Image 1 (cartoon, rainbow, N blue to C red):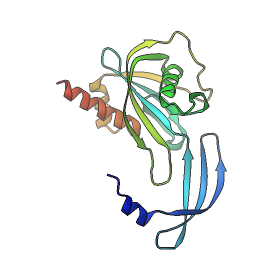
Image 2 (cartoon, one colour):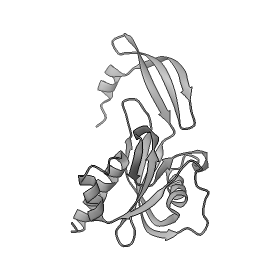
Image 3 (cartoon, helix red, strand yellow):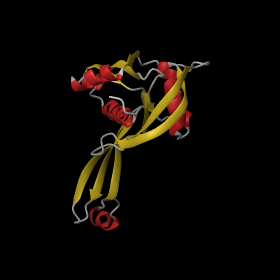
Length: 193
C-alpha cells in the first residue's frame, strides 16, 4: 500500500554523503540527513548491487542447496544457489540466474520464473534479492569459470529432508527459508504434503 501523504511527512533529505568504506561487494556511506521535523541525524547505509537466489527443483522434486563456509557467521551454511548482480549481467537479474546456476551447480534451467523479491536487511542496506524458481534442469554444455574464493558442496534435499532441517533450525539463511516456504506452498497447492 503506497501512502504518498505519509511519505511526504516522514521523508528525509540527504545533505551530506561520505563514503567511509569502498569494498568489492559493498560500499558503506555515512549520510547526514534532515528529518521531517528539521533535526539532523546520521544514517549508516550499506550499498549493494543486488542479488539473485534460485529455488532449483529437480525432476524428482528435490531442492538443490549448497553448503559453504560463511565468514560473517563463522560456520558452514545450507543455502539455495545465489549471487550478486555484477557487470556481466548488465543489470539483468535473469542473466544472473543463468550465470549462477552454471557457475555454482553446473545446471541450466528450461523454465525460470520469478516468485518473490525483498530487501535483505532494509534497516541499513539497499540490497534487493530477486528470488526465482528454476525447473527442467539439465547439465550445462559449457561451464563458466567458478569464483576463485568459493568452495561449494552441492546437496539435493527431498522435501522431508528440507523440512527436518528447517524444523531443526538448520535452514537459517533468509533467502533459503523464503524458498523453502514457497516450495511448501507449491506442494500444498498440488495436494502434496
